[in-house]
Image 1 (cartoon, helix red, strand yellow):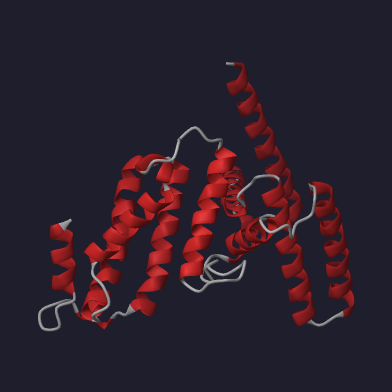
Image 2 (image 1 turned 60 degrees about the vertical axis):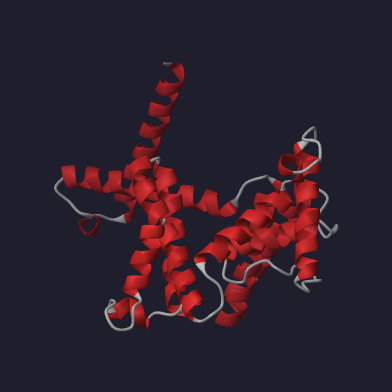
Length: 266
């Protein structure tokens, strides 16, 4: 760790450092930080543990970069970041580091965790129920977290049937908007529908961002197989049409289903 901190210091040295690194600030580095976090998630999704090691290093470097800029501005340094996280984890786990009993249900531990976080928010003058849900989160994930926070104070449908009914309602409104309203209003209605979909995910105990990532990966995998089948015919997607590609898509799905069934029976 000291070596990495020294490398970062050298990169930011005004006289001998890297011009690109010297020019950066918190705002310009933030998108890279977000990107690196997603690449960590991607390596985990692919179960590429060697790649994960590298991606975790990239993500750690982002923390080091921000901490170096903060130290230059007289705000804090990397040691303060590590100390803050250590203090937070100890405070949030009194059943591990304190005198509280570990003999609690997972539900009770979750309630205790939220009570501690609420106290932390109060200490930051964050009094609102939704305060502290980061604005910079991906929109789907933020919707999920906003609804989860609201549900803790009772602002929630009692069961999934009400959510499904709301999805039907929002779908009808979107169709109406498409036919009669402006593009701005169509965008708003689509946003409403996606927001309710995120709520459905919460009621089903599914993290929507992870679910959509998995579906994206599935789409890529299947479409690549469609392209491979077209190539075997001496064609590309541009040479094909929807009917042919759709038939190949169904073929790919059937093959995947057969492989899964074979694996389950083996």
